[in-house]
Image (cartoon, rainbow, N blue to C red; front, top):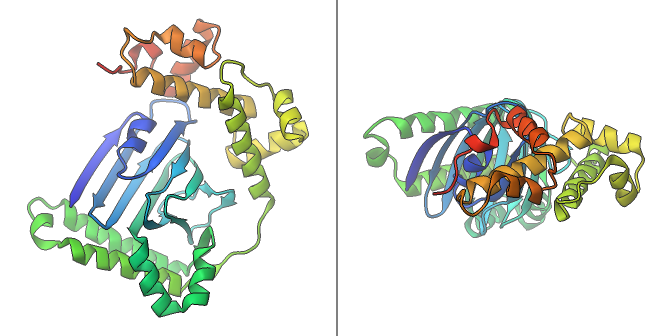
Amino acid sequence: MRYEVHSFHDSQQHAAAIQGWQQVYDQLGAGRLSSELFQVSGERFQVFHEVLDKRVVQHGHAPRQRFCMAFATGRPPIIQGCKVSSNSVLLLRDGEEFLLHAPEGMAFMSLSVDLERFTRLAEIELGSAQFSQLLSMPGINVPMRLLKEIKAQVCRNFDDFIRPGEHEASVIEKDIEDALMAVQLDLFLQAHVETKRSELAVSSYIVKRSQELALADPDSPLSVLDLCERLRVSRRTLQNSFQRVVGIRPVEFLRSIRLNAVRRRLAGSPACECTVGDAAYEMGFRHLSHFSASYYKLFGEYPSETRRLE
């Protein structure tokens, strides 16, 4: 069993530290990021809690052969095109893709267990038909009282884990797995399925497709009109979609995505193989002085100060 507590000033280092998740965290909020990550993982389970003080967009895939439930413990994010309420629980299955727009100050908790075992137990408690319906949903709503109880229960376990010398002796891996499995079964038993899709889902799709188009040919940045033409939407629809989902203009969002790509390129290569100018040019930044100023505004450091691979 692994127990870890970390703090980071780089969104992608934070993302890479979460066991089993294939994901990219792009920082959108300006300034030096500060984050905290707590995680406990075993052969058949994982639980982690993360806190980030800047707006971040998270995109990737959940762990394979796992069933994951996740919920906000602070300001709720927008997930899979749906605005999450304080009593919402996100469901992810077996490497499923996810897209999460995290607001500044977001705190998030994730519980993952073995999918095959959870399926067997859930079909016994719920019946195959009801379980299949719930399993197909992107998320569920549960009574706030229950969710508060579960948050408190897991946090109490966190306190046990971090007491020096206690967690290795007192917590058995199988007991933790069973406790997490029971929590997820309780959530399913009390679930209220939300079937109504809002215009936020359409806006989220527009933002996602804009990001994909921008990164498909990064050395030729797309304008607002380019995006409108490709997506066949009006300028007002495009602007409103970005404001609704990420709270900033399309040009700012797409520039931030490209700046994050430059930062990952710099952090992942030694200076002798890739200069700052090379990395910037690859992502469509032609004016280095403007690029450097934008980089500093977003990350709180100049590109020359970003730690490089040795």
